[in-house]
Amino acid sequence: MLLSEYKNGNYNVKLYDDGTKIKETEDDEFIPDFAECIDITISTRCNHGCKWCYAGCTLDGSRADLKAFEPLLNTIHEGTEIAININGSEDPETLRAFLEHLRDRKVIVNATIRQDDFEKYREKLLEFENKHLVYGVGVSLLDPTPEFITYAKEFPNLVIHVINKIVTPRQINALAGNDLRLLILGYKTIGRGVDYLHSDGDRISWRGEYLHDHISQYFDAFKVISFDNLALEQIKIRRFLTDEEWNKFYQGDEGTSTFFLNLAEGYFARDSLTPNKHAPLLDSVDEMFHVIRQEVGATPELEGPTVPMCEG
Image (cartoon, rainbow, N blue to C red):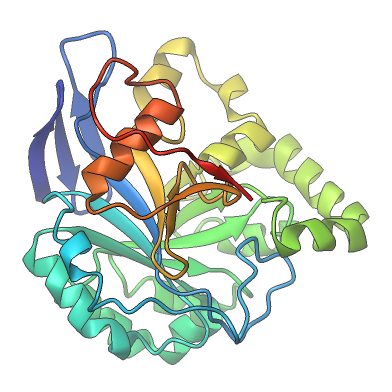
């Protein structure tokens, strides 16, 4: 089913309820007027303490006052996709008003939650998906038990998230062949990911080598298998694609049609990998996206706000 159809700059976008996105232009490149995807951090407060957490979330982390950010959220364009994390100290019910507000503005919300919290709040998340408060649920994998796989199949648009160099062969083999959607994320060497790499480097390296060497055997083992930009680079996925296929499927570099918005700590950046190169929040997402586009050298000719990206 078609969820959204809109024009963005020099291209047309169609977004379907299974996550398929089709972008078409008559020009040689896609030049957006506004961000089509925004990664939004709403909280860095979490009780899980994952050893590789790149965001450094703790129980003492910050939580955004989402009601206060409504004027900014109201500048998000219809059809824009946003991604949020539901952290380990967050009951999804506390996000209902926030999600209802975005749904009513026809913003497409995808939410990621850790597997143990997914199982705890499964009924609530299923309600949220049925009411279109979220369109896609991403579950950060802990243990691919038969029970979890059964739960996952209850959700039409659930995607299982694993991290390159963290996911084990046993885990990915247990998931394979079950008609599931899999997203492989790159291992981020920032935040606690740096310390974990130093403390458990041999196992991390071995897992990464396994996935690099065996990834092709999983291409047909999942309903969909996808990668973020960092995983594409780490696993070297382009070696399996022709130039034509790459140009058809690759969604672009970070900052060309996306950016990162941290409401919990009050800044924006090109992506979550560059938290030390950021700027204070501006009044609208379009203003911030314009700054990001200038930073990546995509729109030097456009007029608009110029904000220095702070180091540190």
